[in-house]
Length: 260
Image 1 (cartoon, helix red, strand yellow):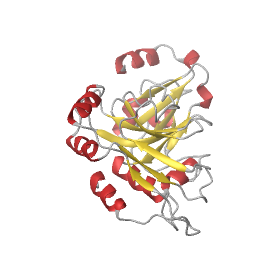
Image 2 (tube, helix red, strand yellow; image 1 turned 90 degrees about the horizontal axis):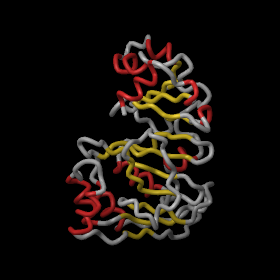
Image 3 (cartoon, one colour; image 1 turned 135 degrees about the vertical axis):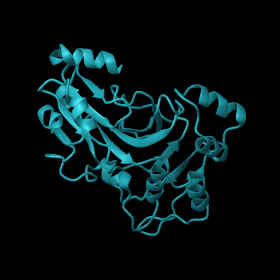
């Protein structure tokens, strides 16, 4: 993983501008002191990684003015590594897909970005885009450094950020028949042992999504399971299943209890 602090240090020396040549503002948020870092770490499910401690001691986050050509109509993109309530008022619930999400950004439309934090090791993994409408979760970046780079691209002339691509549904290819989606039967007979094991106790109506390749735009929507459905996950693996709660019975119920 690239060093997030080095990415931000280089950004301080960079001149951001729109495609029309208008200067775009980039600004770091103040760092946290040791007491504030400890308080933030205490809210996490596992130990705060050393690289995150170093990042927070450098900056809590940053803001970057967005190129006016980005179709999301957002003037400024705010990234807050601490997920403070005042900066992330509209964080979208992941419905259990991310047991320990660390929200790092949101927009005015109720969409948000969250890091998948490992509950045991405390490691910060992939950054997920949690869309409000349609309700879906997709891979945004492989890690936080990648997300920072994607966010900085919003202010770089001539570039289309992966954030813009994912938000506009252009990051993962054909959403109609994604290669990472399986029926329960297809997943049970897959050559991949982790995928087959996860699907072994699932009902036939379940759809399985394997996002382990971590390609931006890979994901799933949970519209079919609304309003009372749930998302199942294969422990730490980014393998998911969705099903209406009214159809979850028997072996699936036992599976959910075992994985909870």
